[in-house]
Structure formats: structure tokens, C-alpha cells
Length: 115
Image (cartoon, rainbow, N blue to C red):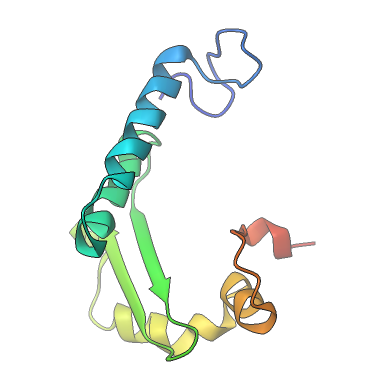
């Protein structure tokens, strides 16, 4: 996509074209206005319209109960047992482990934990 991640910026220093910024803000508004969690979960996958990708996923992990939730698109990236495998190994994920150990609610990137 032209204008994303430093390509095609219009000199504003952000590296995004005005059109890309407009589309990104419109996406944020759509997601923010979701009336409930199920709608939020469905709408967040619209990110793939902004950032080209082969697959996109959204995961939730309840650190207190260990319960997990995931939604992936397209459907053909799913395979039998994926939800169970994710739940079984979620505690090994560096970002999830960090949140569980520190209680720090700030968003983190996997790259924050790579050296």
C-alpha cells in the first residue's frame, strides 16, 4: 500500500500520505465505536485493509484464568487444534509473560524483548 510505514509521505514528517492518515484515523474511529466486544473483535481485523498481509490475527489472554481467545483471517490459516495449541503455549510468549510477571498494562512489541 502506498503511503504506509514511511512510503509516499507528503512532507509532514510522519512518513504517511494524507490519504493514508485519513484512512488510518477512519479505521480507528470504526473500531472505537464498536458497541461491544464481539463487534470490536470483528472490526479489528479490518486492519488488513490498511496494511497488506497474507493473514491477520487478534488474540486475547486472560492472565488470571489462562483463558484465551483468537480470531484469524482468512479462515484457511486456521487448522484443527490451533486454539488449544495457543492456549497451551501462550504463557511462553515474551509479551504475555512480561504482562503476567510485571502487571505492566502498556502495549509492548515482540521486538522489545529481542536482543
